[in-house]
Image 1 (cartoon, one colour):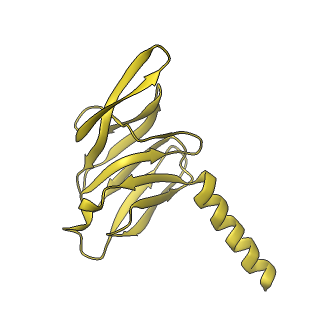
Image 2 (image 1 turned 90 degrees about the horizontal axis):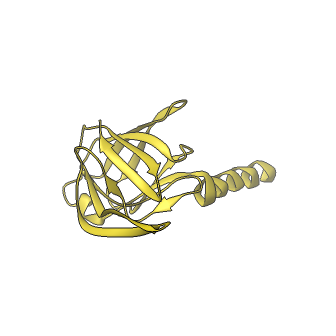
Length: 140
């Protein structure tokens, strides 16, 4: 029994420490959220639905890497994205995504422009992927 518990804890630790794709949120999304919300998550090979508490500041999506899609049931504000081996607090807005707090990240000899906060609207689908030196997001 203790071996099973230890193995479960190890798997949970590995997922949360290194392999889980994470979206970091601004707590402002919790003001209109009532208790919890769901988010559909998918990539080319896997899909699922996760439930998160409205006050969570880190949404652990699962092992989706650096190219995935989400559809939240509540409006949320994303402040950073972490994939399996890449992370960025500056997010490049592509088509249909609004945001604020402009930022830039040095990538080679040029600056990549992005936003420190991007807004995901409830019921809409969004694609996140690694683009040059930061994560990009577009509305599908």
